Amino acid sequence: MEEAEIKSQMCKKLQMAASRMYRKENTTTAKEFIILGFPEFPDVQIPLFLLFLLIYLIILMGNLTIITVTCLNPRMHTPMYFFLCNLALVDISSTSVTLPKLLDIFLRKHQRISVNGCFMQVYFFLLSVFIEFLLLSVMAYDRYVAICHPLHYVVIMNWNVCVLIVAGLWIVGFLDPVTYTVFLSSFSYCRSNIINHFFCDLSALLKLSCTSTSTIDHITYILGSFVVMPCILSTFVSYVYIISTILKIRSAEGRRKAFSTCSAHLTVVILFYGTLLCSYIRPTSTQSLEQNKLFAVLYNALIPMFNPIIYSLRNQEVKKGIAKLFTRKLFSRDQKTIFSVQLHGKR
Image (cartoon, rainbow, N blue to C red; front, side, top):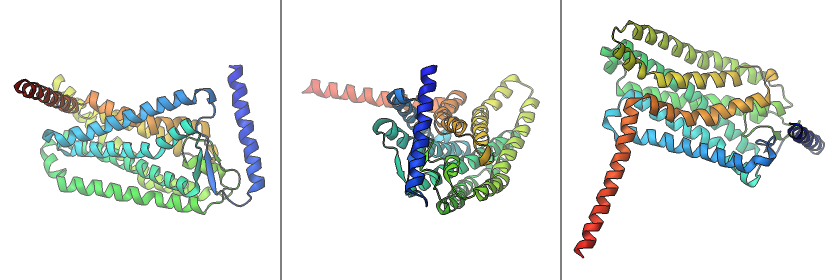
């Protein structure tokens, strides 16, 4: 414990010294940023590299499996799995924005990133966050219609409506982070160019700004009022109606089947909304970088890794689709082996 405390104090002293040197050399604004990653653990950088590499590979394989199974299985060509494919795509994009740079920091100590590169990372990360917020609320509404109004489901959630909804989500997702990026690029970063995070996180960048961040706080509250809170309220209301409808089903088997169609989504919603709200829906003056870094690991690495696992374990159709996919691959491989053996025997 004492050795860990000494290392942590040394890390903070080095960071403060670097910040003082930076302020002496540059009194205007940063030309590049230095992302620290996890300097609190200097002796385990390679194990951390292997851990996050494993997490990233699981995210890619798990979400690509969801997309592949949904595309290849005609029974899964429904609105629910169409939205699930988009969720898997968002998870892949959000982690691909941040984790490759973190792996580079662990392996090659390549901590420098250009100012424009940092702003682009902020933009694409916020883009994926906004889309996921909207998408999860749409998925909750989809489950509400399926369980509470099953006879009208095909009419309400027809393919034209679903495609228009998803297109609208992506358009809003691309537009919302523009305001943040424009204001960030107009700020002066003369306090330091050292980002105590593992990617260019919005809260970490604001800590370095010499310009007042009240504008960003106002934008956050406005977007929270018109985008985030409506998503959370609509999701909450949808699940109130869903649960009340499920409780009215007389048979235990019927209740179990109805709840199994939305339990995976409800788990993902609680995890994602909870971590994002704890991290961002607070004034920047009250935010702790250490806490934000912990929350960022949760919503940027662990939740995208758990999403395909949760949907695979809690959804019978996904499990059947995955089993069918692997059975088909093994069967085709066995057929090729038998054919090659027969061909060799004839020769």
